[in-house]
Image (cartoon, rainbow, N blue to C red; front, side):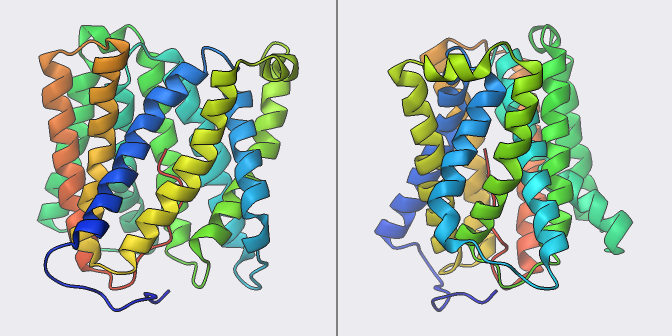
Length: 306
């Protein structure tokens, strides 16, 4: 893909910086909104409904891509059903948002390892050190007594990150698919299998969906429109106009916003292991993100962050 506008250098214009920070705040707030939503809606049915709405809204942008549909469908399923089923279950099972929000950032380190194994890319000392730091941070959080109480949630978030990482391998082989086109395919790859899974695993999910409170439906609207359309659309708009190495690190603010909002609004527990482990993980991801950005000149396809 080629940028729609010439890449700008130097400082971000105030409007661009404001949009970039708003996107990160939306993505961070999504952790709190989703956490509260699963107290009102069955987790899997919530995700299925969210992406059914995304699919309907993005349907006009959906295109068939001859010669690329194998990769597109792999991305749609892995970055959709695989990632979001694991992500929402991890939020439903966890007591605190912070470790989950930060654990999801393992996608880039895992993707880097997979690119070495399957794409033959070289792993230099900086990227190797960053991977060790990122995984070390998650390990430190995982051994915190507070987090150990809901260790299945942390394991599930690693599954979510792995699914997104595998999807990113396929993303590197796709060309000419717009962000809203890909969002439509991700919606299509998410809601049918998750809806079926919800019917099999959850108790009366359709009846509970129809009986959901105003907040439950507001959460669906926020995650579908705010997160998927405004969030991903806005972030891609910024990526088209600024260097990746300057934009991508801002995405690390989303888990920070999510963790802080969890503490302020939900009373999440904070321990030194969670804080230090989170900082280590984000530091490793930051190094990988910057070095990956220097290797690419065109913005990558944007799928769902949360």
